[in-house]
Length: 122
Image 1 (cartoon, rainbow, N blue to C red):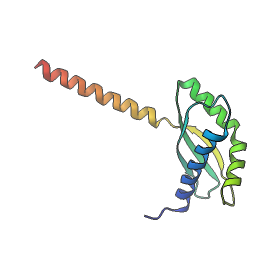
Image 2: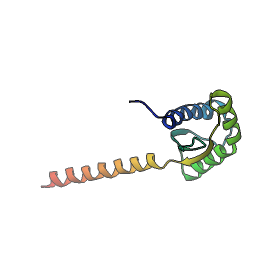
Image 3: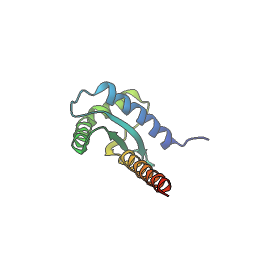
Image 4: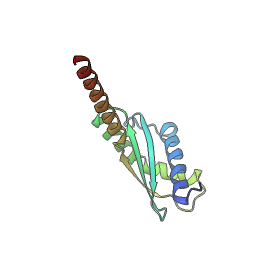
């Protein structure tokens, strides 16, 4: 299946931004961060970068602050690394889907345990 231009750019930005975060940023506020997805607008001018971060809510907020303070550096590096006419404006957003998935898994596990206990009691 052929990807459209926005999908290709989203994938490319996700890879490059991940690389920059792990190899190029030295900000102590940025903890263990994983770029989960990038959504690029149809006109290719804006990109929402979703990330997950390890730790409590305070650690996640510090990571977000660190990423936001590095926006100029990240856009500059993307401009040097990528052969694109315009580097999109980037917005970092905390991705809650990972925690949501863990919570759903936990609920399913509890339901299964309760079901097993009920069956063994009968």
